[in-house]
Amino acid sequence: MKKGRIIIFVVLVIVASVFIFSPKKMTYPDEVALGREKIAEMSQRDLASVETSISNAQKRKRANKREDLNFKQIYENAIIMGDSMAMALLDYQLLNPNQVVSKRGRTVGNNEEDVAVVKGLSPQTLFLQYGLNDMPAFRGNIDGWIDAYEGLIHDLQASLPATDLYVVAITPLTSKGQSVNEYNHRYLEFNEALKTMCERLGVKFIDPGFLVDPNDMEQYQSDGIHPGYSYFPKWLSYMADEADL
Image 1 (cartoon, rainbow, N blue to C red):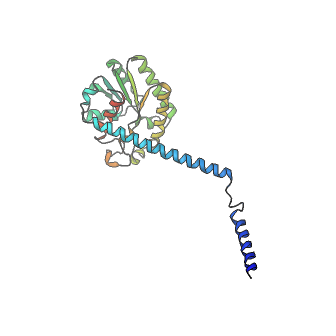
Image 2 (cartoon, rainbow, N blue to C red):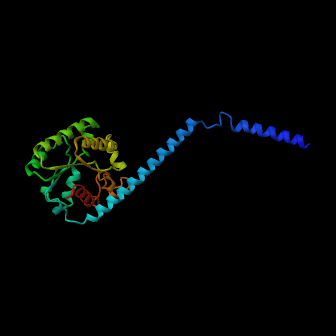
Image 3 (tube, rainbow, N blue to C red):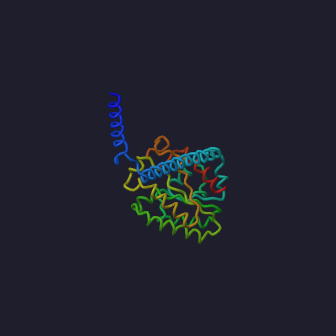
């Protein structure tokens, strides 16, 4: 009887081994390598996310530290040129009229008057803030927008060779702001193209998007496009820090 039980046990072990190590259950070296690559990719992605979060937290701390300063004095020799985002700095009386050259609805394709004013003032530092109106004005044509933006930069650099030039990213839009037209939801694509252009031209790109949360409607005006007042002192502080003003 004992011998019979031993034989049965051995048979069961063999059968179990067949199931465990059958081709359908085996893990091949290629699969192992692929799994390791996926794990490494996820680890790098998580690490990059953590590093970005830490970096943004440090930037926010720097911005908050300076947000109560006298920006009219800090931007004494600087100009912010652009659309309604720049105009808000006048509405909130954070800067003087000679420090902001802008009108609502401005794009890189309809700002000839503003360009002439800036050339006449010849600032030491110039910030360009465009994009909100450009997305619908250029009907989502990113390449066309970049060509026009690049032409603007070349024109300004030729006329103002001693001016330090900075290009500012499009401010993040809430879901409501993105739904205003069929192009606004692509603002991240526009920003990425803007950043690439700046790298190609050797112009510094400033992205203050981390200062506002597009998922928090309370941080925005009712249109879901323009941030509320609290954003702008932080914005000015961060840009001044980036430009060493």
